[in-house]
Length: 222
Image 1 (tube, rainbow, N blue to C red):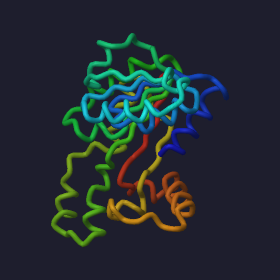
Image 2 (image 1 turned 135 degrees about the vertical axis):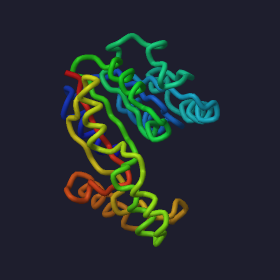
Image 3 (image 1 turned 90 degrees about the vertical axis):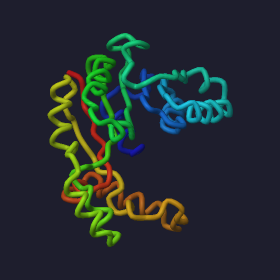
Image 4 (image 1 turned 180 degrees about the vertical axis):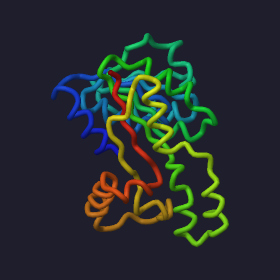
């Protein structure tokens, strides 16, 4: 996903431009730190005090120039309008958040308002169109059957939502096409570069990307 995001940033903005980036639900700050190291001005919003503490600890180990480029705000991602003015950011990230909300449309509308004209909204969401895949491939037939009944918040609905909030879908990728059934504690393979190359290729190729565990969608504000 980091490679996909970099591809979109490089393709949309002039090389060397220092972007204003908002990361809503930043977790421990891994993505925000990566972009701060690349020279961008980062603002991270996170609600969980433990995750904020971990992010601050990681940030403390960075050089001063990077620390100065990153601001951390404790708060709910649905309250971006309380903390920031509309149009304040060139890029807004919301990765792994929507899947925890029953009705994420209000959050998405608020995030779109944070975008400057031509700004990009990057979303990472669970692919509810393929929610039967993981249990099915693992032999959990009851889980696979239940997966078919998952309330859809997949590509079709998200495409319509992005169009409705003024940040229509520009492109999308699949994430974790072949590796979603690998155990979290599994050892990294020796041919990790090849694995990543396969996942990256599958994530942009039909029909593989359509059955990925996650979808990475990029919308652009007109």
